Image (cartoon, rainbow, N blue to C red; front, side):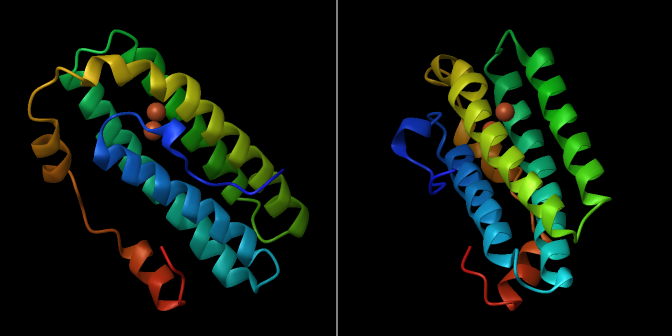
Amino acid sequence: MSAFAWTEAMSVGVPALDADHRCLVRIINLLEEAENDDGRLIETVINTLEVYCRYHFAREEQVMNACKFPALAFHRREHELFCRAIAEINGRKSQASTVQELLDYLKAWLLHHILIQDMAYKPFVADAPNLEELTSTMAMHLPSIEILRQTGAQL
Ligand SMILES: [Fe+2]
Ligand SMILES: [Fe+2]
């Protein structure tokens, strides 16, 4: 698969959620960089991805709820299935074939999810009030991001 990068075409119209998506892309790319590293870094990256996904999905679901997005229940189910898939692959971590399998899956899933499913709520955020306030109050400190920074990762 070609280089994985966030582009303007992936913007959902909410700066905090775009920032989350950029961060998810970055974490997935870190996994690619960690592929030939020791198992500990791979484990940290996968754990960070799992934690950040849960954080982002919760924040995104709050935004969809505030916008009265009609397909929220379906969208939430997609998020949950993805979290379960990562947790399952996480349980089999550290094998090179598993990391490659995970990378292919993550890139394909995230790209498709942002461009098709996240993009579906974009028209609803345009007129929603106080989204900036809502997303900023949900911002939280993520210990695993700090661990990654300590490894020298540029997030
Ligand atoms: Fe989503
Ligand atoms: Fe998203």
